Image (cartoon, rainbow, N blue to C red; front, side, top):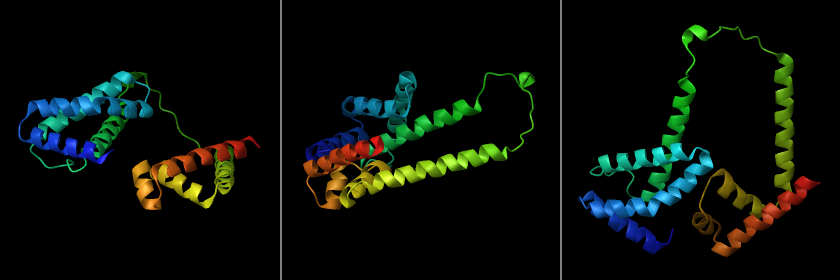
Amino acid sequence: MTKSHQNNTSKLVEAFRKGDRNAFSCLYDMFVQPLFNYGMRLTNDSELVKDCIHDVFVKVYQKRHDNIGYNNFSSYLLISLRNRILDEFRHQTLVTEISVDNCHITRYTPDLEHDYINHENEERHQRKVSHLMDSLTRRQRQVFTLYYLEERKYDDICHIMNMNYHSVRNLVHRGMVRLREAAAV
């Protein structure tokens, strides 16, 4: 996010908190598509994502006088959307349409062979990931850790690694090419 975009967002948030409904509408228009794109990465259910985005903006509107999360409004929205979608996932796993009368109680017996196979598969996957990560250069491993594991934005990575934006993008691209080549072997 550019500095001017952050300043514009900050001004809109401040105007919204003071009661300007047009500012709220502008914030909604500014963030609804990026939020939808982000939500679709978490689930393929577009209606669920739309409902969750709506819930997030309702919450923002209701808490407009609180000063929670407005220092970095875009991050606040993304985190709120992720949490709202996860809440829906939890709710869906707890709620079932099967009647209690139709449930059959079964006793779980641990399957040692199944557990052993799962453990072996997990170790094999970990060895493969280690092998693939070893095929990367030190800087590529660092950028992959920051981008994929810590979920940092390119601007943050640029600042942390003291590199320009295009160099970071090139590191990610070259790292992906190297991983594909190593995985093909």
